[in-house]
Length: 182
Image 1: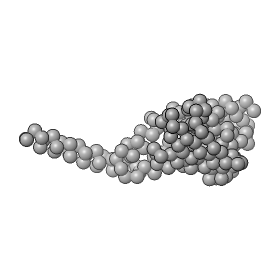
Image 2: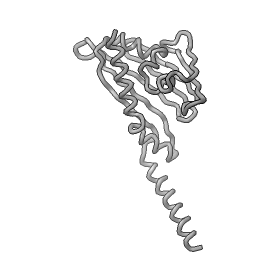
Image 3: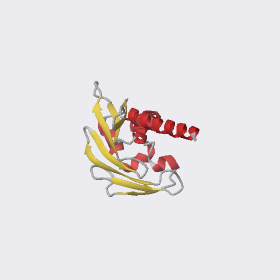
Image 4: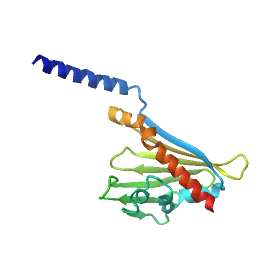
């Protein structure tokens, strides 16, 4: 009985310690990557504002990840403010979700919202600016989500860069390659 009490006390103390440590983590998780593309802002904007081009460069697009093994539905038109797409896939980890462009400015980039049953809602921003020489585009891709106060969500937010940073860099690399073709 004494061993059981010690075990339960240790579990409670550990749980309390984890909770108290989680209070030190922010309730907002951010991930961002930047780069430059040797193409005009208008060319890059055409890629990011048209949701039908996302499978070619976005590492989290379901068609990109599953080789097209998901059902996708696009708004008409599928580009600019108000454009959206939904996906559903019963065969993989990504069950369903929705992306909607909420702001689109050809000179500045886009802002979009993404919802997915397994995640908190995510706001994505792709900022575009001309490079100093005016010949290319400086790009900043940022994801932000409110993780709340739950310790497990805060830990996930803390690890967001490790979990998704490499994929984001891959997406920017593919976007660069596609934009520089034109």
